[in-house]
Amino acid sequence: MPRINRAAQFAPFNALRGLGYALKMKEYEQEKKVKGDLDEEQIQKISACILSLSKNDKINLKYFSDGYEKVLVGKPTLFIEEQYLIIENTRVNFDNILDIDKIS
Image (spheres, one colour):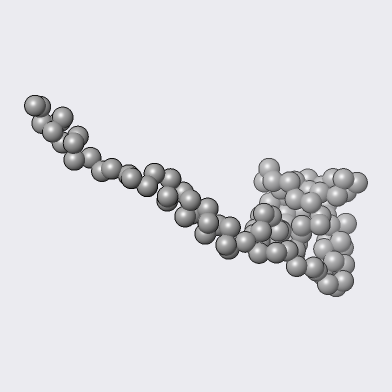
């Protein structure tokens, strides 16, 4: 028997195929949070910042998505009437914005 064929018989065997993926998904699900409500002051700050944005402004955006708080930095495209913005090819609804700051 050639050496390469003999070595193949000792290749690792994964008896629990998919277990690693299932564990990662379980951990992902357990770390999820429920979106809390913003107070009136935070809502006013976010609204004022959105309304004051101009074409070349760069922002730091903290938002809620799929149970997690995420951060994006870049130049947004606003869709005021539809109540969302797009930044770095990610669509964020105004309802999911947790904080927004202009970057000078």
